[in-house]
Length: 344
Image 1 (cartoon, rainbow, N blue to C red):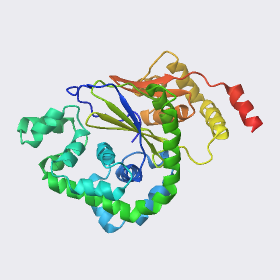
Image 2 (image 1 turned 120 degrees about the vertical axis):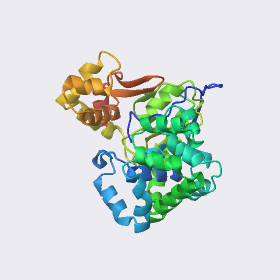
Image 3 (image 1 turned 90 degrees about the vertical axis):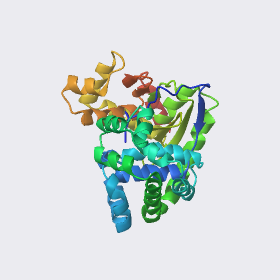
Image 4 (image 1 turned 180 degrees about the vertical axis):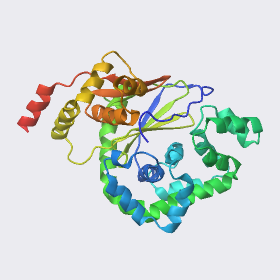
């Protein structure tokens, strides 16, 4: 569940209006993020919440929750675009999100889950109508063929009920106890970015909120929604729904300030591999695969280094509009950071 994310792109959709930028927050968003983590495939130690969070979630999970989550285990990313349905219900209430899922009568939930694997929604729609060739083409693109086949062949109302039950069980067993401690930080981060919305251009605000992810607008996107997440830190995740791009950015933890910023910068620079990466990035936007090949490292290793560099503000990720990679930010003024720290 990390940048660069698998993005749902539909070139047939074209933006008819100028970009609309929203800043939103809500416990329903965070409940979805937690469920994605619980069922996902990312390295658990890569999240700031740490391994204990995952152990605790598994211990709290009832047999009913474990059973409901089992078909999606290792494929939590298929839930990403459900963030659009959370947005439709204003994001605040998990109960309202569950009600929206359970009340689906048009196949929105099924279609949203299937959309994650393809940029050709006409193929998805044809496959859902029973077109054998479209179904074959869709499944050939899938990274979770067995799961996607089951979703394609299921009754859309059954899919909606299945996901509603899963979210409801997740809320009951795990998330309800977490919510009170998460809400203040989410709300504070939302307020901070909301205040900056009138002060910064949209592109700079997105980079600021995400700590260095530059989203280059795709032609069919008309709305970008910035949503803070504590559980997902330090990752940034992109979702898409009906022409809206939803970007989960790291909520600021309580007490973070110049001390943390200074430590992040020196941590990022205090590693020989990361210094070699920075030298490569001096030539311009560079992809993850290229960095890994040129340094003889696994992509997962490079990915971890890039999170540290981006979190320190030294690099930024570039995604969208046909480009994906990393680029250098302006170099931080180390003297100014150190002076700020010494003056308290």
